[in-house]
Length: 456
Image 1: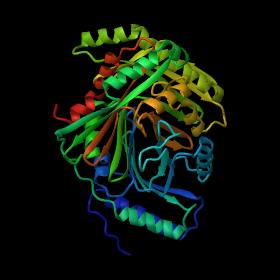
Image 2 (image 1 turned 90 degrees about the vertical axis):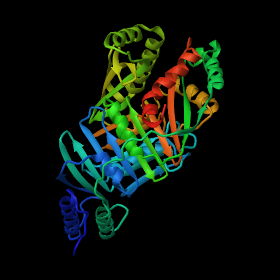
Image 3 (image 1 turned 180 degrees about the vertical axis):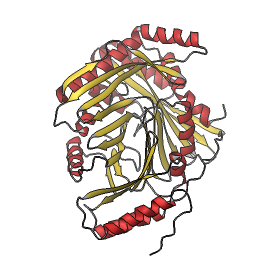
């Protein structure tokens, strides 16, 4: 049997995978979910991903820069809409996790900010995918993987689907050069007068006593007259903010959600959990001296310090029932990004034996850094008054795996649709918050992505 594969550096490795799949037809599957893997050549993963025409297309790049993933297709795709409760999701996740003993199997995806209301088309309130084909880079090692789902399909049919997906892989082409777009219109929801009203409602003493923090956000819709390549935008953004998580989910050609988020929700390595309180913001200085002065002012600023402490206390209280031990840094440090700097406290927990990833998602998401405190009353305020549907903005994106999992809080993000770019930014509102200053903070948070996209 002959296979005509794209003539590029990967063709031999792709052919080897097909040979392995053909051999697998002779052997009954040992587990319901199987992954074949081989070491492969180094390629630019984001360019490779942008060159493919199989969906979903998924990209993940860890904040520590050690790991990068590009994945296409799906051999298992879980999509849940409104009305599926967390217990059902946790049960489905546990059933799926039991189908393999392979520690390398990963389900990539995300959950919306508010799972009790409708979310974006295609994305669902939560959606997780076991990709068909995956490239992973760990440090300088590249591997090529194909996943097989024998739980839902006859082995021979599943193997044929995998072979067809490999045959349809296209060579990596260079990304299109960055091009700034002409802005046709800009709409902010809420607009500034409404924003001012919302802040006044949050800081009103009676409300504030019961709900000391609400994170209000804004949806900035940019209408443009050109095609936007989301992967080129993400690659540019990645270059500007290298010490962030970078990820993208494209379930169809119509919509792509990309993010360059500084914030970790959690990272689990077996029973060890790492998370953080990232709240409190100022701008970067024009020189080293000014930058240090701004950082010191942030460390000494009462409003930002209270905001960070609230987040830290909440995370510790949510993790305590799931953990044997939780420890958090007493003093905040500065976490620097291109245009802004944040207050940061690291938190580490030793988890109880039977705790699973979905319980961690339930406990930690949404964090007080994107929702508020107490969680329920802040969420209710946002749901009823913010005026737009957040979808996956301020949600949680990442991957589940048997022995290690990692999720980022999906802030600093964009939903790209035909002729339209949707940007999002939020600010923590507590007693003493000033509407003009908080509105400016939203502008500061959009500065990097705006400078990539638009002729300013």
